[in-house]
Image (cartoon, rainbow, N blue to C red; front, side):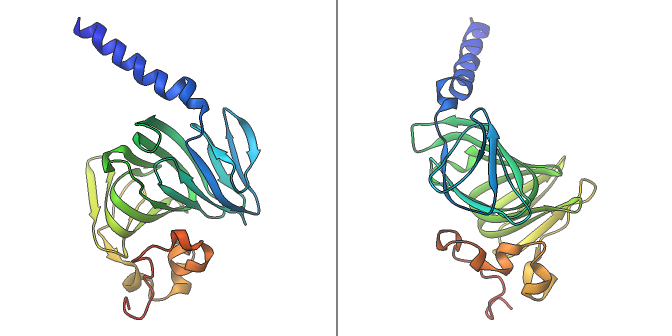
Length: 227
């Protein structure tokens, strides 16, 4: 009986993710510049404002492109030039919350701002480890064989195998390359100024690259007070 019940639960979850719900939008485009594409079950599309985003969409931008997105639970995602990531897992909990929302990021820069779902619903996968979030806003850059993660607000726990680091101070960051995971360090102390930080954390160094919806409190790591 337990086996049958477990099978039914698994089938129900599968139908939520891969059935009719998978054909419903899970987010929308707030804005897109230059060339931002989505490739998935709906085919390959060049994205523009108000377009839909679907499960298994691989979102990518060219060397000058960038886009801003909002998911059904209010979660916001901004991607910079040369980015590539896929919405690889989701389970709806009503129309405005998720039981699961998972992204797998391959390269480039993005900013994440958590929405209305429980913190346990969110997971960010990178080539060098997995990030769990709690009411969080943060920037991630996958560049030159490393992943850089900077916390803006809330807290985040990044694990590379059995080794984990927790970020809980605004403007602290860590670096992972699959072999070593750094201790948290302050962005301002490590980079000194906006120019030196711009390649690794372009959104922190240049907040004007994002619309006002993504300029959250705590993101001005290079203000006079932060220095």
